[in-house]
Image 1 (cartoon, rainbow, N blue to C red):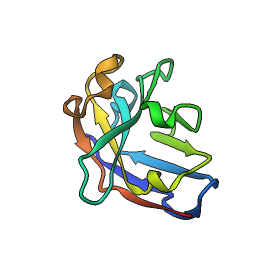
Image 2: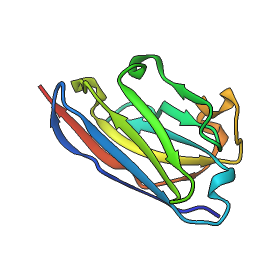
Image 3: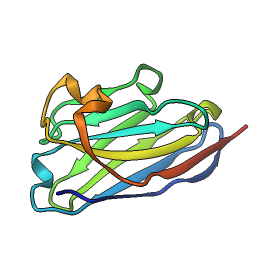
Image 4: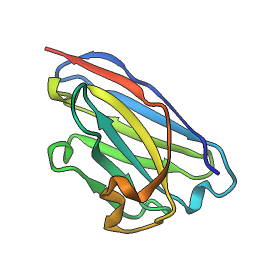
Length: 126
């Protein structure tokens, strides 16, 4: 079992930055692949970024490449999403997720994840 709690969301102007954090419970955190997804009002949940269990492989959705960075600290049971050069279209609820798939491009897929946080709101104003 893994429980996930996101934090760090808020209101930011376009071009600004935010860092999201995801705190995970559970002794086996380091064996999970971790991902960030987002869901805007009226839209489906979409993949943003993912990281392998050791942090040696990362995956990004094309629209965030070069702007967002995912990282993890297994000693602290934390996953981060550093977001820079934010755009209004990045506005969404951002959710952290854990997958028993430890390292694979499958981490891009919604169905790979069995554990989800409640999400944190990110609003980017123009």
